[in-house]
Structures are given as structure tokens and as C-alpha cells.
Length: 158
Image (cartoon, rainbow, N blue to C red; front, side):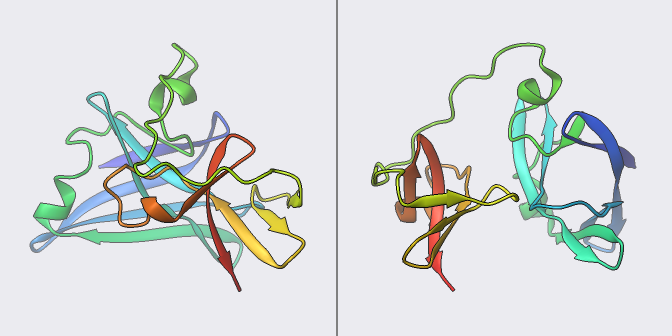
């Protein structure tokens, strides 16, 4: 199966889903652009993050090989592939409900001291980096989220 990929509301590439032995393999291909782009699969009222597109030459690509058990965590029927965590937000048909708050609640530091970079990440004056994160509450990384300026980020030091 092949699906169009929508980035910033525009068709910008394709995602193929194939079966290779016992595995389902997703392969995404888009023209190169700036910033980090996560692909989300939407369908049947579900949305799940497939992964982050990576640069390869003049393209952005993603290959994800899933077992049957891992594939079950994604929408059974894919209706849309986009850079938005919720299909409703990408289609602009209805307002999306606010994302669930991870438990335990992330720290709420002052948003001052963080500088926004062009790719959607933040940089602190002390060298910390923050990347936007939309994680389910049961994610092992959820306790490591920080809320900065009303949005959840994973914060790390390079």
C-alpha cells in the first residue's frame, strides 16, 4: 500500500507499507526541508508516531520494520499520514482535544532563558537542548518531560 504524506497541510511525499516475511515495513520518502519532521499515522480514531524523518542526500527518509505485535500499536487502517499528532488538527475539520497530561506532571520552568531555533527546538543559555515531545503517559520517557512555555519538551545536554 502507498499513502501520501502531508507536511504542513501539503502533500509532500509517500509512505509505503509492505510485508517482508513476518514483518511489516514502512518506508517514507519526501523532498528535503529544514527542521525535524515526525510522521504520524492516523486511522480509526487513533494516531501513532511512526518516527522521525532523517536526511539522506537531497531527501528525507524513514524505514521502520515492525513485528506483528509492534504493528498492532498503530492504526489498523491508515487513513492519513502527516506531521501532525492528531488527524483532526491536520485536516482542520474539528478542534482536537488537548493532549493528555503525562503523569507525573512535568516540571514547569520559566520559559525565559530558552531561545527558539528554526527547527522547533529550544536552546538554553546553559547549553541544554529541548525538543518538542508528544508522548503517551505510559512512555518510559514521560517522567523526563519538561513543560516550557505551555508545551512539553524532552530536555538534554549534548
